[in-house]
Amino acid sequence: MAPLLEAEKVTKRFGGGFLNRQSTVALENLSLTIDDAYPSVTVVAGESGSGKTTLARLLLGMTDPSEGQIRYRGKALAQMSGKERHRFRREVQAIFQDPFEVYNPFHKVDRVLTTPVRKFGLASSAAEGRKLIHEALELVGLRPEDTLGRYPHQLSGGQRQRIIVARALVLQPKVIIADEPVSMVDASLRATILESLLRLTKELGISLIYITHDLTTAYQVGDSILVLYQGGVTELGHVELVIKDPKHPYTQLLVDSIPLANPNRRWGESELTVADEDVVHSDKGCHFAPRCPHVMTICKQQAVPFYRTDPRRSAACFLYQDQPVMPAAQAPELLLELMKREA
Image (cartoon, one colour):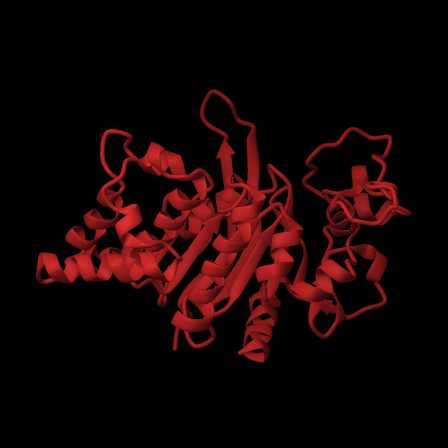
């Protein structure tokens, strides 16, 4: 059976037009598979500009890859019929960073819930539609009587974001792509929203692609993780392994940026220093080489393969040349293997 959602050797470039031949590689040769039989939480992590949002837009069919394919149930998005795309749009839902941008301030919040029910024909009557909406709101911890009938500005940021989660649930999706879903809400509300998202996988069998720069929340919700740097995957594997014992120097930098409640350890004391060369995106060699304190000559000369540093994790770093090479095309297989173990 074909995977539910699949990115195969996807590259996305911007620019390179007639007047300007230069292009920027936002995502490079990335592969990812979400399997219908094993609902999971896959984390995509990295700093700003690493390609996370570009990946989300590709998976949602909002932009086309420059190379490679995005497939849903075995069918390339670009080749879908109208009926197939209609099903794709229902079963693959998005939760974006800023909940306020989703709302029209002149309409009550009910509109973001009633519109998908109507457009996708989810209810045969108004009463059935209200029942679906009420059930979705209750699933994310909201009381319909305290939520419906209000305007966006009358609700908190956490309430607005949970309504967007409820909107996705109304459509009974198979996959939810959440792009920084808690970065703009108070810390006190993040746990509530993250708990709602986790319930989707555990109770409803919905796979979640959780995109974030925050490794703390990644650790809380994730099963597996891909770490991106300048559009390429630097490390991938089981989330606990990658965050507790990072192998790639870039992942180590991200983990070190997490503030710890330890008075004997200064935040950022092991910060990686930038090498003498300018930080540039080179077509050959490791993209992280200019920032890496362990840089070697080979890092600037050759593309870095994935090394299988242990059974549940791989890192694209020449520090592990003594380990077996894992072809990049096998990355989805490793993640799928982790999903099966967690199931």
